[in-house]
Length: 596
Ligand code: PEP
Ligand code: MG
Image 1 (tube, rainbow, N blue to C red):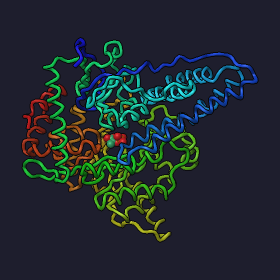
Image 2: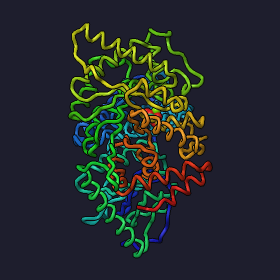
Image 3: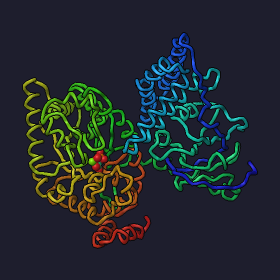
Image 4: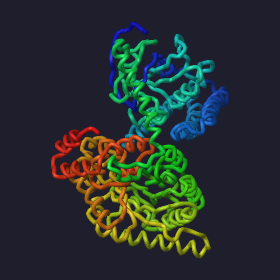
C-alpha cells in the first residue's frame, strides 16, 4: 500500500456506493493548441486535415457505439449519439472551414475560435442542464484536436504500475463519456470508479457513471494537486467524499462496507420474483417509470408489476419531424408486448415547460390555435393536456396509436396536468373520436381501455371527488404537485431549497387524493420521485397508497423496505405526521419512526 499522506476531499457523489483502488492521474485535458497562419494555396490542405480529423473521431465514436453490449444502460448509447450529433453540427463542422478560408489560419486555431463561440452561446442559456452541455462540446472538440495532433494518443493511457488484481480509480480534471467507456471496456484494467475536479451531478459523465453503477465523485476541486499516482483511493459516493491514503483501520472499515454492499445487492436480486407486500400481508404493486420503449427491459429485470408511467413525450423530442401514428404504434406495442399482459400506462404527450419540441417540429404544427409562441411562464402555459387540446391532430394521432397498441397487451391511457373537470370531458371526447376513426378504418383496439388522469396540480387534488367520477384511475405526479403547490419552478436551482416534499400542504394534497380514490374504489398510484424514496415509503403506505411507480432501479430496495413495514404502524405514523404543521417536526417524526 502507498505510504502517502492521508487526505480527504469533498465533491458530489454521483453513484451510490464505495470504490477502492489505486489512483491513476490523467494529464490535463486542455491541449496546447498550435496556432499559425497559412498561405491561400494551403487552404484546401488545411480543410482536408480538419475533415480527416472529424472523420476519425466519427469512426471512433461509431465503433465504440457498435461495441456496446446489448444489456448496457440506454444512457451509454445516448451519450455517444449526443457526441456524434455535436460532431455533425454545422456550427462545429462547417464554420471552422469558413474561418480557415477567410482568415487563413490553421485548422486547430479555427476550431478553437469556434469552440469558444459555441461555448459562449451555451453559457448564456438559463437552463442548468443545457448549460452543462457545453462540457460535451468541449469534449468533442478535444477529440478532434487530438486527432489533428497526429501521433498523440486519442485514448486514455494505461497506468504504469497497476498490480495484477488491483482496481483502478481514475483522477482527472474532467472525463468524456467516451473515455469512461474505453476504460470500462478494457479487459486489462478493472475500473473501480473515478474522481473529477470539474462537473456537477447532471453532467453526462456523472449520469453515465450512475447508470453503469460506477461510484464516482465529481467537482472534487483539488483532486489532481492532492492525489498522486498510485495513491490508494476510497470513493465514498454516499457521503460525497474521496479519501486519499486512508489508514489501515479505515481501509478495513471501507472493505467491510464494500462487502456488505455486494451482499445486499445479491439479497435484493433474490426479491425479484416475490410479490411485494407489507409485513402484515397487504399487497402492494410496484410499477416502473420509463421514458423509451427499450427501458421496458430494465423494468422486467427489476421484476416490475407493470409500467406505471411511460413518459411518451421522449419519443417526440430532439427530432425535427414528429413521430407518425405507425411509428408511435410500434413503440407502444413494443412495450405492451414486452410486458406480456402486465399493465402498461401510457401517458399522453406532456410537452411544454422544460420538455420542448424542436423548432422545426413545432413548425409542422400548423393547426389548432396557430403557431406556438414563446411563453413568459412555460410551466403555467400551454403544457401537457392543454397542448394536446390545442393541437387536435397531434392528440388524435397519439390516441389512435395507443388504442391500436391496446390490442397487444394491457394498455391504459393517462392524461397529464389536468386541472379542470371539463378537460377530462374533452380528453374523453377525443378518445371517443379516435376510436371512431379506427372503427372507420376497421382497425382493432381494446374497447374497454381504461383512461386515467394525473394529479399534478393542487386544483386536481382538491377536485378528486369530481375526477373519480370521470376517470378509471389516478396517478399522483408529486414532482409537479410540489412545484405547483409551492410555486417553485422545479428546474430553477435558485429556489431549489424551497422545493420541500414534506410541506404540510403537499402531504395534505397527496393524502386527500389517496383517500378520495379509496372512497370511490378508484385506484391511485404515485409516480413522482417520492414513490422511489425509501424515507417516504412508510408514510405513503400509511396514507393508504398501494401502487408505487418509480425508476426501475428503485423497485427492489423499495420492495425490501415494504416487507419490513406494517400497514398499521405506517397508518399511525401517517396520523402523527398529518397532525403536524411544521415541516421540521414532520421530518423529525419520519426520522423517529422506528427502524424496521
Ligand atoms: C410528476 O410530475 O411527478 C411526473 C411523474 O411527471 P414528470 O416528472 O414527467 O413531469
Ligand atoms: Mg409531471
